[in-house]
Length: 97
Image (cartoon, rainbow, N blue to C red; front, side, top):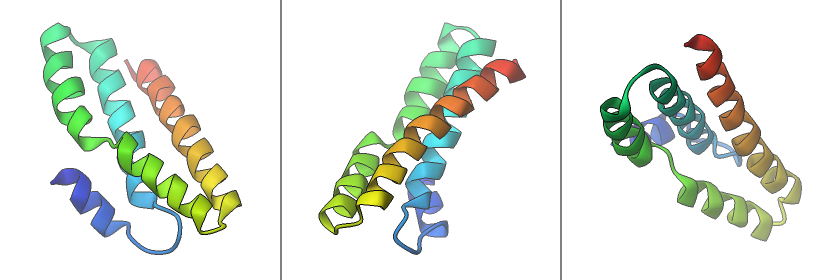
């Protein structure tokens, strides 16, 4: 429900900002919990909530749809930004602990 709501709030245009936002936020939260807390917290938050909140399947589908719609530059930018910004969120979580 949280992922749907973020997607709904950030809907518009050709770039899937909702999916990008949940992947970045979920990466940060999962990494922060993993770096700062024990195994039980990781299992509950990272696997439970963040696993349901983030979405590799939507990211993949939206990237393929952009490619099929001849939006090749947007497809590449979507793929690169999801990977780079999610990894940056993990690095930021590491620094925050």
